[in-house]
Length: 625
Image 1 (cartoon, rainbow, N blue to C red):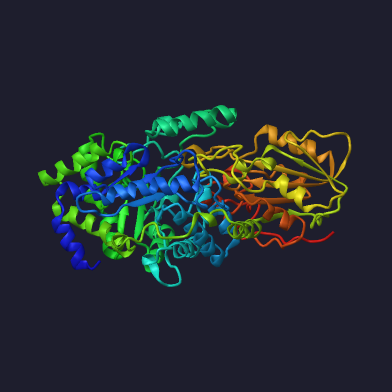
Image 2 (image 1 turned 90 degrees about the vertical axis):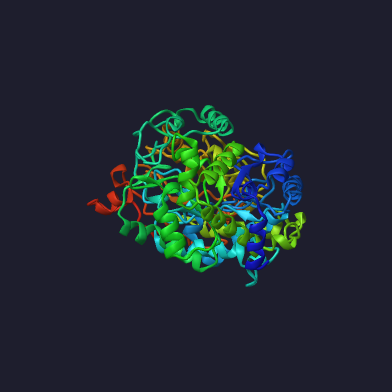
């Protein structure tokens, strides 16, 4: 479809049809018939927005029903279906689940990240999805932020390199670009400086970005859907004290970046500049603020800088419910967001209200028709580039390849390369013929804790029955037939002293504001379990499942070997590959590891007279005793 064809189509569209193309709705809130009637431009599955049963086949049918609805609209404009596939297509049971981005940052391997994106794209396409809300190119400056694990590093250069690699893996198939049926549209997010917000700055719900203070409670900061509220309540019941007031809750997510424009441009903007140069056609705006203004209302950054100075020709999409936070008057909020430069709005529920408000604003002249036409033209242009007008939608990889052995081999490689050997007293590699090995900690046998957030559900699912290999299973599969492996979730074993004890410590899964955490020390029960294990084995190996560095200086000396495995995903055998010497430890820390609370955030660490526990880039090689 040429530019002239797009202009001709735009000329045939009514105002209502144009607004429909600017509207993105969560799949629970709309039917295929409503998509057809209103010419809706996009549907998404939010975290947990899965069909029942949750299989690749039911996903394909669900997506196809909405796409067919769009083709029944008056003009038959094709639909874009989007999901958060941030470490594999983890919305679907049976998907290959990769390490979260913080682990990929530890690999420093751009080619591996590109291959991971290609596998993710193939599994997305197998379910009919051609839009992935990834990669995240955040540059976190405070590890207390609950989205730290979604970032590759605290270093702009590494984030830029790996973010571009992931984008190219999604979009550029054999150099043919988005028109290839195997390509998936990437979404570079969250523009801009979402990783630069200040602690206790969250809680704003107006365009000014003014904070309501550090209340420690996610409910006091952001309006959330009933679906997400039920998930939060469920996990609060499961993890009890870890989510008490003052420990977890929104403190920094969606907060305010009190930084200069020079710092914004130096630290946070470069990944977007590079992404645009490498074919980015969609960018999602951050729910946070810069200085005194919400990013979704920031005409200077969205229109003047992004579309003007940087020459971004794709379309800008809002984040979840973002319009609602711009003004208490919804009509004014819509006007602010669209005039600032939003091209498509993730409503995601009360979409009729959004459509009505934007039509009214256009008719009243509060939103110029030139702005409406520019937004719709951008959306249509990207759909044309993807070949959607030519029927390139469901022709793709078969469901048979979903979660395949070949895909899982890439994930296993990624796990092994992401491991950072923090300490080793000469005990590696572990002997496969050891007489007795104790494995302790619930996470060692819990694939949900191994995967973390954004896995099947928004916040992740402790337990879970997704295919994969837990660390316990991997140990059992690796050692000799004569080795006895005994597991105890609580670390309580018999009086026998084991040759080796392996204990796995994990953060409970979280996502977004629910992961903002004031206290990064280990909970008392984990510390007690480490002490018990120390007395029950000759060699103690610690494995950390975490979305960020934790404050563990007081526990380090208990271990003969300590490994940061981040949030490794479904293929736990990658951990044992390194522990037992089949592959080397090569991972390097993508974040500095603070020694104490007063070394957080990064600016405090850099100004602190004492060094961190481990510098960014640290990673030991295993050495024999």
